[in-house]
Amino acid sequence: VYGVEPGVRYAIVARCDGHRQASLTEALTFAPEHFDDGLSDRLELTVELEPELFEALVRVVDDETGAPLDGAVLQLDGFETCGPTPVTGWRRIGKKLEGVAGPAVFLPCVAAAPRRVQTSTARVELRNDGAVPCTTLR
Image: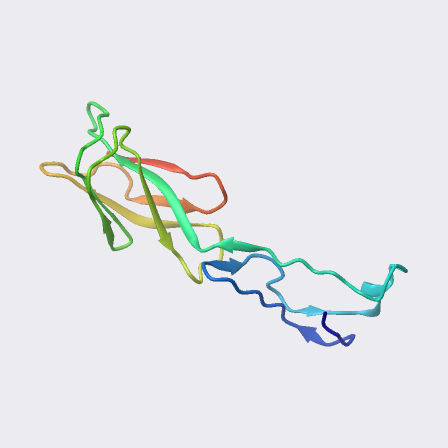
């Protein structure tokens, strides 16, 4: 419980490791009308936090057959991920994006495999809104 003065600007700041503040990011100025509901002299505020880790599912496939390319190396914004490709070909990738304003950002995503050249777009959309996007690199 905090006391506030009418007409004074207050910044609401909430912190938690691995999360960032998603609501009440602008300073608030309280007025007597905020407390004029006739029920109490208190005002409850809720601050929403969102994860800083963004994820996507990416697979690398042969352009002609659509078969996953085993052992392909994925590079997301300068960070490499490699290893055996799952049977479905889908790999979960993610990146902690501190300071990014919104829930999606487009990053360079490059695939490399022996004797192959990437022909599809080299950007992937990363989200943390509960719906993990899928991107196929050819």
